[in-house]
Image (tube, rainbow, N blue to C red):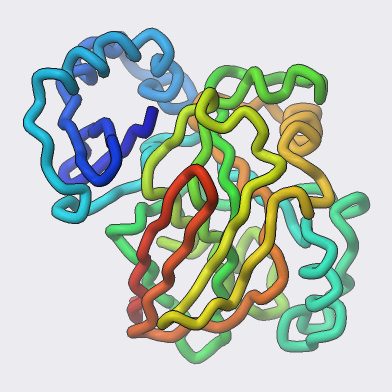
Length: 285
């Protein structure tokens, strides 16, 4: 199942290149009062909503996906988790390029662990990326994104995939400089998630997916998730050992080598096997 959020926060079921509006299922979400629980209520209820989603889709008129503005399929994560230098070749390129490390002490993920990004940085492909500091180097980083489906606290690696709602393409955009990662990667629009959520049963093994990023037809990043240093179960185990993961939380699993700068007017085409592809426009803030 492929679930998207689009236009004015409508929900769609995507089949091939057609979208079926299933927004009526939102009316069945549990009513809540302040203070609201952490996490995304739609993602938390996704399994229970499946029959209603299928029923709503059977009655909806299809429309081309290309006709809508795709938002992030997750509206309210409590956190976005990043996995730094989680491909060996990317670690190697960072270590030898001063424009990437700015004199910072770059440690492998085994030593440095994970980092957090602001949830206000989250957008969908239809919203694009706005470069807030165009005078500085801003880089693209394509990543497999994992969306947590239920509360995960100190989860063992062997059970980690049971906590996954689905997968999406992620762009972990970053401005280069001496500041901490979490600051440079938390700029508004610097976490792109899309084009939709592919539910977990569609990707039984996230450890063998081709991923690629191109700008203007020029391929810049190309690898496979089998090259991750910490794979998806390990990342969930590590993250949940430090903090509780909530439904809708996003884990950006790391980017392969080939990161490079973008400028206003560029268009990023990112794709991941069995998920799809998304186009993201770059503009000045």
